[in-house]
Length: 90
Image (cartoon, rainbow, N blue to C red; front, side, top):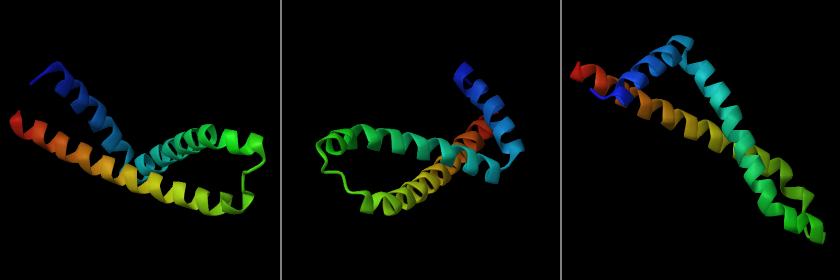
């Protein structure tokens, strides 16, 4: 087992102890903010040119929330599989 695997075991054991729901909520918020920041950078030019449409903001925000939650759920599953794989090697 590598040092990276041992560090992951310690990290993921702490995350699991906090619970899946808390992990999903906190990390979804982080992904949501990141998506908004990236989107803002790409939309800045449109905003400055006056071509920006405020109509799509609510739908875009709902989409970002949904995408964030889905990504975090997949991330939880991936980390669980990796954790169980390492635990099985012990």
